[in-house]
Image (cartoon, rainbow, N blue to C red):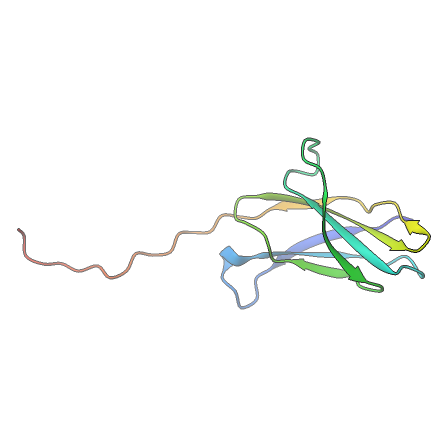
Length: 115
């Protein structure tokens, strides 16, 4: 079973620095109990950091929002379907580096007489 995992950025009403990674995939199974979403903090081509379980969804879900991301960090994801018989093969991997945001502007500037 092949899964097609894609991702995007959810900005909505939150500032750009609080962007989340939004994953979506095609549910090609008719008998999954849930999906397991795994993540690692390196490029998908890297091999030094292992994947860890990020979340488990219920059946028939095709999106997940990872809102626990940090600026400047690269994340790589994969998804698998599970039921009582076992776990499917993993989807393709998909990843992105969360962009750095522009710093907040200074405020409260005052000018007074010299000392």
